[in-house]
Each structure stands twice: as C-alpha cells, then as structure tokens.
Image 1: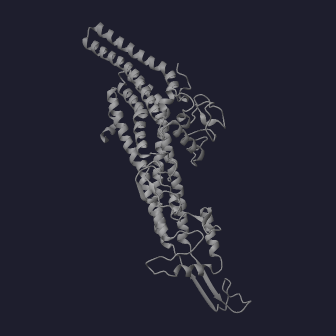
Image 2 (image 1 turned 30 degrees about the vertical axis):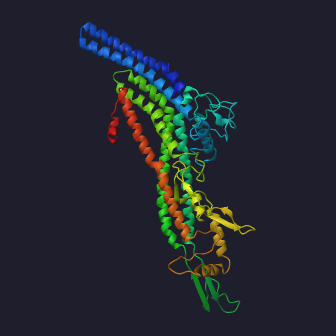
Length: 502
C-alpha cells in the first residue's frame, strides 16, 4: 500500500522506499500483460501477435535495464559533482551553505529570510549548527533541535553537508540545491539594488523641487503689521521676493529613473521565477522520475514515461552542470560585495567601492552586481548628512532621505541663508557653460548626478546578463538535452512544438 503522507516526504530515498512497491507492481503488471498477450497469440496461432508480445517483453526488459543504468549514472554524477567541487572556493559545501545562511540571516525579503514562508530556511535560527548535532537541519540550532521527519526544512539544509558523509539523497540534491542558493543570492542583490534605486530617485526628486525662497519687506515703523500675511492696507513700502529652482533639470533624471526601476523590477521578477521553479523541481524530481518509470513500463504511456524520466534527469544533471560551469567561469570569487577583486576586466564607468577618493574600477563579475548605493555614495549623491571632524574631514551623520531633506530645509530656514547660498552659487559662474549650485548639508551636484545616473544604467547592463540572457540560454540547452535523452529512452520528443525553437 502507498502511504497517505507520500507527498509530505521530499528525499529521494524516502520517495524510492514509498514508490518501490508501485514501481515493482507496475513492472509485474506489464509482464503479466505481455504474458497474456503472447498466450493469446499462441492460442490463435498468430505470429504477428506473438512477435508484438516478444517486442513488448524486450521493452520491459529494456525498462528494467534503463532504471538500473539511470540510478547508477545519477549516483556517479552526484558523487563526482560533490567530490570535484568539495575543494572549490565557489561551490564547496562550506561556501554554498555559508552564503545560504548569510542570506537567511540578513535578507529583507521574506522569501529568503529565515522563518515561515522562506525558501532557504523555515526556522527562526540565526546561525549554523555545530557538527556535533544533526547535520540534516543545521539551521535550527537556536529555535528547534530538529524538524519532524518529512517536513520541508529549506534549501540551506540541503547544501550543508560538512558534518557527516553525504548520503545518496544529499548528493543527488546538492547540484540543484547549490544552483538555488546562487539564484537566491542574485535575487537578494537585485532586490537591494531596486530598493536603493528608489532612495536615489527620491533624493533627486527632492532636490529637483527644492526652491530657495527669500523675501525682503519694508513697512511703516512698528507696530505696523504690513510685513505680516495677509497683507493689510496700506500696502508695503518695499517688497522683494526672490526664489529659483536650481536643480529643476533633475526631472530628466528622475523620469528616466522610473524606467530603470521598471527594468530592474523585471529582473527581480525573473530571479524570483527562477528561484521558485528550482525550489519546486528540487522537491518534485524524485516523483517525476519514479512516475516516469511506472509509465515507461506500459506500452500505452511509454512515450510520456520516457519524457518524464528525461525531464527528471535533465533537472538534476544537465541544468545544474551548465549553471555551475557559468558560475565558475563568470563568478570567480565569493559574492561578498563589489569591493572584491576578481581578476576580470574592469568597467571604468563603475567604482569599486563607495569612497569618492577611490580610483579603482569595478571588476566584472556577473554574479556580483554593482551596488547602487555604493555608486551613489562614490559620486556624493546618496542622501546623507555630512559633518566635519576636528581635522576637517567629512563625516556622515545620518543616511536617510528624511534626515537629508530635514537638514536641507532647516538650513534654508536660517535667515539670509538662501541669499548667501544664491550669491555663492552664482559667483564665478559663467552661464550657460556651468550650472549654479547651492551649498546644502545634503546635496548632489549636477555633474555628480549625471555620473550617478550613467553608472546606474551601466549596472543594469551587467545585471541583465544573469537575469535574462543566461536563463534563456540555460533553458534552451536543458530542453535540448532533455529531448535528446527522451529520444534515447523511447519518450516523446515533441514537447508541444517547443522543439522547433531549438
């Protein structure tokens, strides 16, 4: 009998144990059908029926041989994948699990952070568990010792294989699970950049509408209220109102920042779709494989069964192998931040860190995205209030749009500050060769705003490689491999017309 809690179990070994009876039963049923088929041919003395029965018997034997070969190939591939990358700085269990736990602890996305609703870890823990404890669910050290058997513990529990010798299930899951962690890291970086782009856009929008206002009023001697609003009769003796909007041209940048936000939102949706798809297949592939074996044993569903077997193999072999090659090639170095040097060609339009005095360019790494906040801080366009220390060096006081706006508005409320700032901004300025600037506590000069905007556009081009180009390329290569393998297994190769795209 098949247990009722079958779909609460997610490991290959558990699925194998629970579906073994179904698989053996399906093979025995197919054998009984072939035997009856052959005896009918004997009774009818019909050589055609007997020949078809023998052919079907050979197919049954071929299915059994295929199952043995497939299990052996999957075991060998997973063991080779894990052992060959165990000493790698990128895809070893220590590196991948460390990255996964870091994301679960620090990510602001509920999809990634620890707790309910997370794909990485469903616990509330904040650190890895020591190897003296259970290595199956290592992230539950501070919240709960173990999870109930069969409960989904998150991707982090599938890539942390440092404590004990990996089992067959853990080795089979590791390639696809490590791919999921890499995609989760890209998802988190993209969400962070999207949030930071909103901050930059809000700050530029504030400066765009900031209007220094100065009014000089001369009335009759006190206590005449002529210079108080509303203006009473008789009229004021002298009234001078002066205001201007020096950064009104930032509207061009803020309008285009909306386009950038829409593009990077699409990239975030692409990464989320990839991560969710990998997570679903990570826990579905054992069912797809064994159901494919069952369907492969029957002549009526043989093509569908071969296709399902090919899909399962493609998900845990071909796709992770291709993605790992890309990661090792294009992401040399742990994705710790844009200041890390990875030995690739530099992008001169992007800084390597947030220091304005830094002259080192960003080094190309398609799995470490240029950071929007660092770009803005490098170009002095991040909303922060800056003070000076005893030596006159700039020191950030606070970093938020509200504090930056409050400090600028408070500065302009000081009597005659607008006049001083206006006169200072126009002094030595030759219009229209340069634009006047106002010295504010939190400011972004026009030239700095342009550099920030152009650098953000350059960063989009780098992010788009892993968000759009690589997924399409990987999809085509995986489908090609699945179609070829499906043909070898006697499965369908049409895929509803998708093969015409390959």
